[in-house]
Length: 298
Image (cartoon, rainbow, N blue to C red):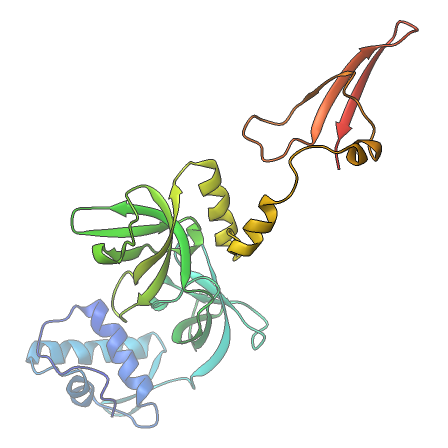
């Protein structure tokens, strides 16, 4: 029998026991078990709880999840099928598993997701469903899609959280104060997951880079670049070369372009734009007409 369950004699709710009883039968699918054997695996000694296990077994039979192979002995009714696919999180907190092993996406409810994140590659066990769609529960995380996330620091007196910019992440990251790396409340930062206990609601992380104050133009640009895995800073030697680029316009530059400096021309980019390459011009022609020029620089 499975050694997964800790033998602690404590009261458990029917909803909690329902999942555990089914799990015991799945892990011992080759051997029918009676209610006493199931209770023993779960570490249940209380008589009332044992009777509850027996009632759950009867309910599982009614739900056609379990069959009574012989009087008082129960076994899962189906052969477990496991497929591998990628997690596609939804806004409700549930997910679909997209897999080449299945013609249809497999729905996984929030309670059966475990510690998965959007984009992770996972193994999922198909479970019976009367909802007309394939349903499963996460068995194993094969590969994390990512471990670093961009978000905003929310700081309290004893701890902090990184609230991810990407809402599909679905979970905030707990940051111990000693792992803030200088980040302050309300600042954008990049944090990395360092631990995520099986039954913990949130992963534990550490700040690896502070981007700046949320809302600042440069901070937000760097946050977008970091979110998509693009470089938001350059090596020192690249910065040094960039500093050597001339800031004045040479005669050669002018000769290669049309010169509108003597015509009333004004840019239409906002004041905080990083380049000014869109402009309008206006002038009165000799025939009395007005000319409006639309300029898009190279």
